[in-house]
Image (cartoon, rainbow, N blue to C red; front, side, top):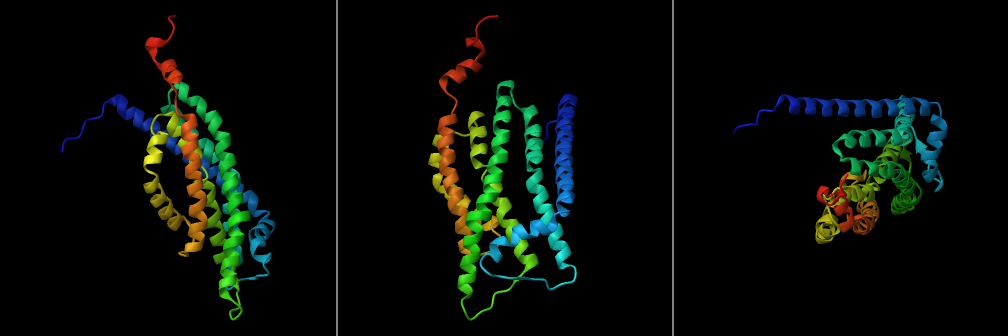
Length: 257
């Protein structure tokens, strides 16, 4: 198989993209690290917030290892650091994408960036306040009266972390849909035609992203994501480039200088 030899300019362009990617990753990791260190100073308050849904149904958490409490608070600090630093992480992603866009496409970044942050926060809050209590109540109810429920703190915190962050990320679906529609990569007809495949992908993602193999937590993630998909179809219809937008970008139809 013959491979095309890259020109010097093409090699330079690839190196520039890799350098921008490296900068974006460093900025994101540094922001998360700084936020995590700051959050560790409030580890007791953060632990209280994370455990509140369990304590509200009169359940207790236990520590079974010498170093368990320390690592739990460390993990919570990293989790909180990522949530707090997410605006910087999101801006780093958009910053990396920006050079590949045409001038008329770059304006969408300034619209989508704040929406990206808001949707992530809404996803995390929705998972914490709406979905997590339902899941916990269900499993405590299933345990019944013949079993005494005591949750290990490290397993519980890992469950909460792996449950809330994915919700924040999947809530970005409308933003991704809007952006890809504006770029002409997808359209509402394509999304509508492939709805059945989207449902299959959503179910698989719910199985992968939820922390346990149980169908309850998977369903509680799959249903909101499917609703987001339907909202994304509507957003795609509303944001589909119209005839006027296409004319504006056609050099032959622009007014003479």
